[in-house]
Amino acid sequence: MQQLQQTTVTDPAAFGKVAVLMGGWSAEREVSLKSGAAVLAALRAREVNAHGIDADRTVLNALAAGNFDRAFIVLHGRGGEDGVVQGALEMLGIPYTGSGVLASALGMDKLRTKQLWLGMGLPTPPYRVVDSAGELAAAAAELGLPLAVKPSREGSSIGISRVDEAGQVAGAWERAAACDSPVLVEPWILGQEYTGAVLQGEALPLIRLETPRAFYDYEAKYHADDTRYLCPCGLPEAREAELRELVRRAYAAVGGRGWGRVDLLVDGQGQPWLLEVNTVPGMTDHSLVPMAARATGLNFEALVWRILETSLSRAG
Image (cartoon, rainbow, N blue to C red):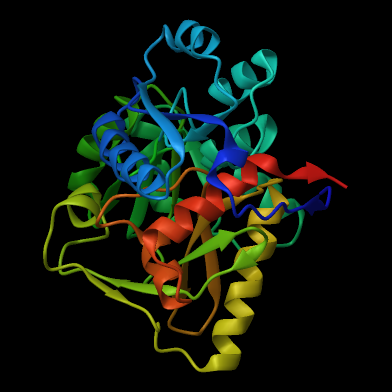
């Protein structure tokens, strides 16, 4: 991966006119609108000339007409986190925050991400791609229960099911297949769940996630008040440093830059398992990257500023 020279900015005028891209048309639209509103407020509080744009399918017209100097991408899911808007911004010559076209496309595709990690010797659970409920049942027999069944190109745990018994196979297949995406099946790793944020090439402190629900699903992420976020995560310092380095390597493997997040599990034997990459993580009041940043003394406004600085990075 190319090394990036990070530019540090002190004057908000240096950013020029900034488009904050939010909303979009993916299944994560509502979360993106909340993230975008928070980012927009933070930038304006720091006197950045920022303007919110609900990025529907006419967004290129709005960008071209607005004479924007750069874009802060807070679009989650398809159309915004998968390289589509990144490619459009490249065509328009508008610098933007975060990862480029290739890394965004890879990060949105759980299957391709896993294949890349496996090829690089990074730990991720074995998997099968299934095309029917019957193939899912066969995969359950082969991989054993419990299983995770998920669409390979969705975020925010949309379409994911935990299968503990054969009677749950049909419903899990229907939920995942409804997302118009290849369906990925892997063993459900029993252990502790962690997430690791990456900011300007540095892996931030890990967060341990705990929920009384069956797993850390959409409700637990965005609405539940009983989800626990532990940071410090409770691991010995040396062990956390090892996992943070794994997070950094996993993010770099897909070509991620600027900022992002990697989710992982650690099983009962202490073996870490990488799950997925998020190249445009949430920025709501329940979101994880702001929590990790706070643990380093970086408040929300300062974090948003640092992310906007990534739009000024250049290959060096």
